[in-house]
Amino acid sequence: MSRRFCTCAPTEGLGRLAMMVTSALLALSLASGPALARETERYRQEGVALHLVALPPDAGGKIRGALSIELDPGWKTYWIAPGPVGLAPQFDTSKSSDVDNVRFAFPVPSRFSEGEAQSIGYVQTVELPIAAQASGQVPVLQLNAVLGVCRELCVPVQAELAAGPKPGLSDRALVARAEAAAPDTSGPLKASGARWDADEAALIVDLVPPIAGPLTDGFVSAGDGWSFGAPSLPEDGQTKSIVFPVLSRPTGDKRPVSADILLTQNERAQLSRAVPIAPR
Image (tube, rainbow, N blue to C red):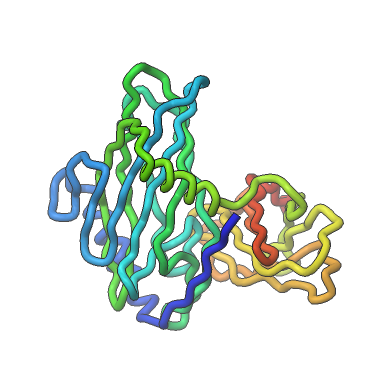
C-alpha cells in the first residue's frame, strides 16, 4: 500500500469553525444554490475538483468505485476525525438506484496546525475507494458530498454527483489507485481494546503483541466532537499500548463505546474498526 504525507502552513483556526459549520448547514438546507452541482460525475469550485466513478458489478454484484478529491496547491481538506476546528466529510448515498451497502475508506492522513489548533487531513489530492452492492439491473451511484476545503479561509463544498457503471481504463486506474492507498484491515498492527486514563484526559489503546519495531503514528476516530492528539510511542519497539491525548470532547457525559484506530509503521498502515472502549 502507499501512504500520503503532507504539511500545511498555519492559518486562522478557531475563528473559522463557526463560519465553516454555519455555511455547511446553510448549504445543506438549500436544494439549489451556487455550490450545488447537477447530477454529474464531476464537480469543480475554487480550491477543489471532485470526480466520482463506479465500475460494472462483478459476478457477485460487487461494485468498486472511487471518489477523487483533487486539491489546488495550498488547499486542504479533512479526515473523518478532523480535530477541534475541522469539518469531517459527510457522504449521503441514499438516493442511489439499485445500489446498497455503500462504504468509503480513507487513506492515511497527516497532521497540520491551524492557528493554535491541530487538525488532521490532506493537502494533496486524495482518492477514496468505494465498495457497494448492486441490487438491481441498472445501478447508479448517487452521492451528496459535503466537505470542508480551506486555504486562508474555509469554503464548505456541497456537490451532488452521480456515476453509472463504466468499464473505462481511466476509471479502473482511479479505482486501483484508491484501493492501493487504503489502510489494511488485518495484519500485525491490531488494536485489541481501549480504556481511559485516571483523569479521562487520554485514551490508552492496547495492542495485540508482538509488534516488531516501533510504530510511526496513530489516529483515532471516536465520533462527533471527539478529537485526539498524536500518540506517545515507545522508542524501543516493545509496543504493548499507546496513549492518545484528548484534544476536544462533546458536551455532556456520554462517552463512546468504541473507536476506529488507525496505526502506521513506515509504509504499512492498518485500521482496526470498532475497537471496544472499557466503561469507567
